[in-house]
Structures are given as structure tokens and as C-alpha cells.
Amino acid sequence: MDARRFLSRRMDRIPEFSLTKFFELASGMEGVISLGIGEPDFVTPSVLTEAGIASLRAGKTGYTVNAGLPELREALSNYLESLYGLRYNPADEILFTIGVSEAFTLALMAIVDPGDEVIIPEPSFVSYEPVVAMAGGNPIPVATYMEEDFQVRASDIETAITDRTKAILISYPNNPTGAVMDREHLLAVAELAEKHDLLVISDEIYDRLVYGVEHIPFATLPGMWERTVHLGGFSKSHAMTGWRLGYVAAPAPLLEGMLRLHQYAIMTAPTPAQYAALEALRNPSAEDAVREMIEAYDARRKVIVNGLNSIGLKTFEPHGAFYAFPSVEVTGMNGEEFSRKLLEEERVAVVPGSAFGIGGENFVRCSYAASMEDIEEALERMRKFVERHKSV
Image (tube, rainbow, N blue to C red):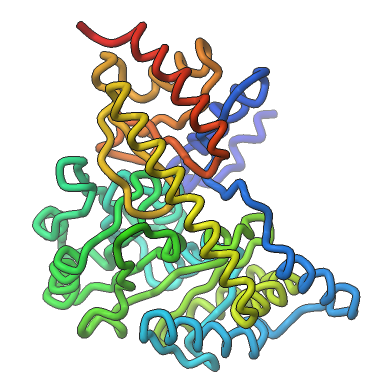
């Protein structure tokens, strides 16, 4: 019997996870330096780990209320207001989730009807298009370009808007490009959202990881608070990827729908992670640790961008997240071929840009969430590889 016949037609729209086979190949090789994984190489600050452990030892091992600990929601509300002047009512406008992945899924499930369209600037995180499809919607990709620092143009978004468009996804600081949207470009998108009566889903998981520029939350723009679903979390800024804690902040009527879905599907985010996050928001030493990580990433960013450009891989200067996104056109290869051969010949793992949607075909993503020693060695191996393969 072929059990596949029981799968729903929905599965025809959900591709295999594009990075799995590549990472499996890299993990089976010896001596590989990985610039592929999109997670901090730092461990969670000890003060946060101890808070999580203390909660377990105190017997706090049951469910919390569905939206998250009341004191944690209050602390996050204060945190967002202190950082950005962004105020959400902790009682009914904040929900803690299992990572930002759940937050994004809840947002799509709550707002998308079958056939609704969601505009997605790309290259972007690999999950966006599949999750829109899971919700029954149609993802509409819009390309961004290195020549414009991968900031999406409002004119390109407007061209993609139809009478079925429900929302625009904004994802800055961006994975995989490291781009950060400036106020001028954000305001242009905000004008479109108002003109066409659209919702904006803003994934700001990398909000703290910016270098020499200001991160501007979309909800702080004039008239945009009521149109914005703000997504964030602790995975990147506080090196808490495995703790699986994200959040969504949105106007109460939208959040109520997301909370209802969360209650049936998940119940609550992990309790120890919530107590660790509470410590992250309350303890000044946790903020010190975040700033130290940002400084380290910034130093690595400068090394990898200068190094990639020096070996002939044209790379714009990323101002956010922890990724560089060099063009590999000089080798005559596309990103997928370049990544495969670089891994085979030099044991350096990078990610093909095509994994992140349209516009990424001739690029690769290089994560600088790796030690400086590994980055410098990887650059040397890549230099030798490019010299061998550079097109004449």
C-alpha cells in the first residue's frame, strides 16, 4: 500500500525543506567550516540559563496562562516602549509563542482566507512562502536587488497588489541578505498599506542586531500601529534558539484570533523559557551580554565583508542580522553549484541563495555567527577556490 495517497492536496504546495539535504551532506564530511547555520555561536548568557534552571527547581513545570506569564508580558511591554516608544497592552495585545515560527504561522492562519495573497519581498527566510500556502493563501514574491541594498521598492510592491492581496510581509533586518530598511523606504510601504487597506506582518527577530544604523519597527510609523502584526523573540539577540520563545504583538482584535489558534494547537510556550526571558528583560547584566555579542558580530561582519570583496565576490555591506550575501557570478557558477563545489573541494559550507527565493540565484549566504578564527580560515579556503574557478 502506498500511504502517500492519504496525504492532503495541501502537501502538494509544501516543498521539502530546502536546506536539509545540504546540511546533511556537510555534516557527513570531516574538517568542514560551516558558515551555513543561522544561529548564534554564543551560548545563552548564564544569568538567563540560571533563571530557567531555578524555575525548574522551584517546581514551575506546569502550563502558564495561554498568552504567557503576566509578568513577562508586562516586562515585554515596558521593553518595547523603552527601546522604540512602542506600546502594547500586556493584557490583550501580547502573546508568547514557540519561537517566531509559531508567531508567523498564527498570524497567517488568523488572517488569510483561501486564495488571499500575501506579498513577500525576496530573498527572504525559507519558511515564508510555505507557511502562506499552509494557511491556504498564495504567496506573491517581489524581488529585491543588491544595487539597492536589498531594500524592497514600494513601486514593485504596488505592481504586485491585486484585489486578493491581504497583507504585505516585511522582514528587516533581513535573512539572508543582512539588509536593513531605512525610514524613507518604510514610509513608502506604509503609504501603500494605507492606500490599499492592507495589513503588514513585520518579522523583526533580528531587531537588536544592527550595526551603525537604526532599526525602525514598522508599527512606529504614522498610522501603522493598527495595521501591523509585530513579530519578535529572543533566539538571535539573546542566543536562545533552543529555548524556542518568540512573541507576537498586535491590536487586540487580531491578537484574540491568534490566541485562539494558539490555545488549541499549542496551549503555552515553554515555561522555563518564559522565566529565562523574564530575566533577560529585567536583569541589566543580560543587556550587557547582548551588547557584547553585538560588538563581536560587528567585528566579524567587517572582516567577512572585506574578505569576500577582496577575493572577488562582490558583497554589499549588510547592516543587520549576521549574514553576508555575496554574488558568485565572477566564477561563472550559480549559487547552488558554487555551494556544492566549495563544500566538496574546500570543505566550507555556505547556503545557496536560491533557497531564499527569487533574486538569490547567483548569491550565497555566509553566516558570520562563527568564530573569527573560522571566518578567517573559511575566507582563505574560498580565496583559493575562487582563484581556481574565476571566469576569464
